[in-house]
Image (tube, rainbow, N blue to C red; front, side, top):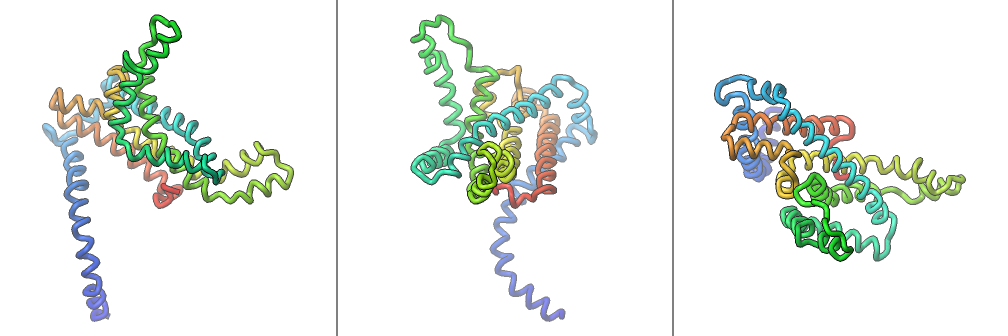
Length: 281
């Protein structure tokens, strides 16, 4: 038995050797920095939980946390409302329209979100398309769109919508059309067939896309800071402020720990219910 185990270990050493660089990379670039942040949150300047108590005791910081979660939830709902019909058309049709929509969604991944954020700066700016349209219509004073909550939310929805669409599409594409035909043959009207047959079958895609968009939105930084307003600060902006302006590394680490804990809890709940291997359908 011992000889066989030793032989198996010798046979597997090439696999372990090939995995070693990837494991070392993950340890150095992911595990070690996260462990350092976790340690910094309770050791700077002394070992205590003062930073976490400060986070709960100060209303401004609680407002930032609440705004982060409410904004992420609202962006997720908007992406779902816009992405579900789009993914439905892409999955149900096999003509040029479906191919064109799929190509448009796929190409959005080839453009960096910083570039798309700057595009909204141009569109919503004083010399942008929106202001020009108001001038053409004879409206003297166009509304302030840039550097508002609306602009920030619009930019995040634009950037995260493709993730929702692809998560929905991956599930919808596997739904057999025979289910709807069977419902129609049994007398169900189209909307009843959709609500009672198609939509329940697409729920895994709804959950996958919502989880993906929500967790990504929790840590958004560039888009809110370029398009939004300081009154609607999110937790990533607060972390940046604590580091760049106040040099409060310990409190910034505590904020990052809270953000990490929220993401881990969401993923743990999803893994408990469905399994992380089903995240992409």
